[in-house]
Image 1 (cartoon, rainbow, N blue to C red):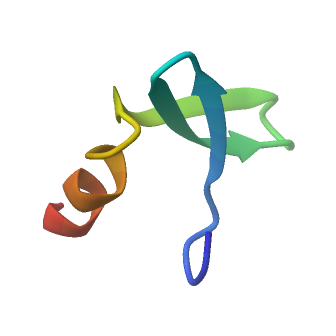
Image 2 (cartoon, one colour):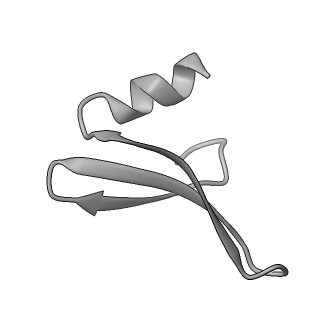
Length: 45
C-alpha cells in the first residue's frame, strides 16, 4: 500500500489489513472488511 506501512491478506472475499512489529514479534490487525470496502474504511479513519 502506498504511503502506509501496512500489509494485506486476502481471505476469500475479505481483506485483513495489518502491521508487523518485528522487534516485539507482534502483528496488529488494523481492520477486516469486504474487499470492495476495506480501503475506503481505512481512508475514513
